[in-house]
Image (cartoon, rainbow, N blue to C red; front, side, top):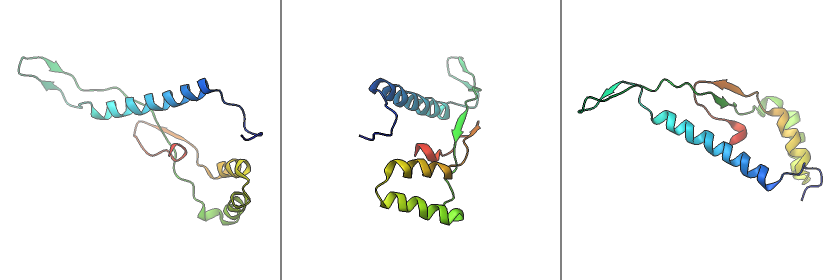
Length: 109
């Protein structure tokens, strides 16, 4: 247990994980939807999916351009200072971008 970490209840963790899973599910569903009108043999028409979804993307950090700070972060990790290391690593993260185009999110893995 980390005495400096804010407490997280099991219910808060479950809600967080479920929100991530729901976002992934709706994203996969959206990609599988048709973008063209389809007419079935019985005359029923399936209209194209025009639903626009927001995707949160985050580019990977550039550790090489900030070499001195990167060495300091590696030092914290080597000294087994996990909480300060994690806090310091956030300094390298790029801003999140919201777009209609899916893309990678560094912070989410």
